[in-house]
Amino acid sequence: MEVERKNGGGDPRFIIEAELRLRVELDVLGSTGVKLYCGYMKIRSIIILGSGWEKKALKFSNHLSCKYCAKLITMSNNPNDNLKILNKEGRGALIVLEGLDRSGKTSQSTRLLSYLEGLGHSVELWRFPDRTTSVGKMISSYLSNESQLDDRTIHLLFSANRWEKKSLMEEKLKCGVSLIVDRYSYSGVAFSSAKGLDFEWCKAPEVGLPAPDLLIYLDILPEKAAERGGYGGERYEQLEFQKKVAAYYRVLHDASWKIVDAQLPIEEIEKRVQMAVLDSIMACQKGKTLSRLWSP
Image 1 (tube, one colour):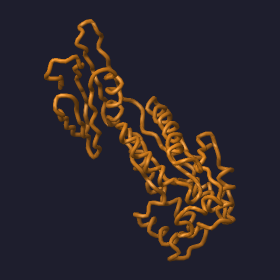
Image 2 (image 1 turned 90 degrees about the vertical axis):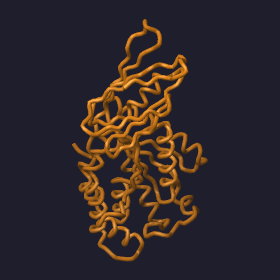
Image 3 (image 1 turned 45 degrees about the vertical axis):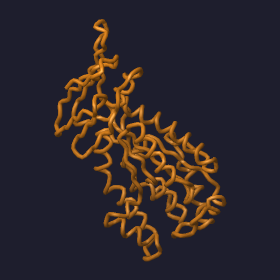
Image 4 (image 1 turned 90 degrees about the horizontal axis):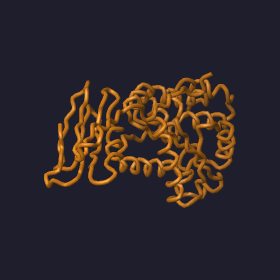
């Protein structure tokens, strides 16, 4: 399909060729851009105009599903220019946000989602525990103090809640969807260890889950977190307990972590998170391998 401006201006023409396994609908938006639909995934529209169009075309190609090979073949109005072919490779990034209760994870996760969507990235926001599943409903009842469970039982339920989403998580990442995850295995280990359970025992059920490409740790003193609104509404929001959780988070620190001061102004935190995440997404699009959590 060829798309060009009707006014005869200097904008480049471009052709989109795709070998599809899923039905693709390609609509011309006016005379200046395209919108692509692939299965369940809606690709945000990209408008290609004027200078810098190559970079915008590349951003468009980065949203094409891994289920097919897509090419953007661009042609300049200058016949002496060479054809340029941009190939889609790589995968989505697994971005995890961790921190103490009331550290700002939910706010920053939501802001990050809006920011990446605004740039045209294919991205979803997930939260653990996922309280919509049968396992998640049991966890939700426990966290709301509506039921009582043994510490080992609830730890294994938290882990099961992550494992029941593993296949979908991997499929999304392979198809180029980046995932922002509000809490992950690190929370499970830190919170259960703070109760007195063996640290290595707590890690064992998590081994083999997809490892984060980047973990943003929102660092805040437990005393400062306790001053924030809504503190104390759930089972674990107790100051002395949160101090223990913070200590175990420090033990879990590894090379995938980016520590951000959660007491900075919200806009500054947002900026630092965005910079780290964009670097991680780029690395994954260039072919970074998805690794396994705490595997030998």
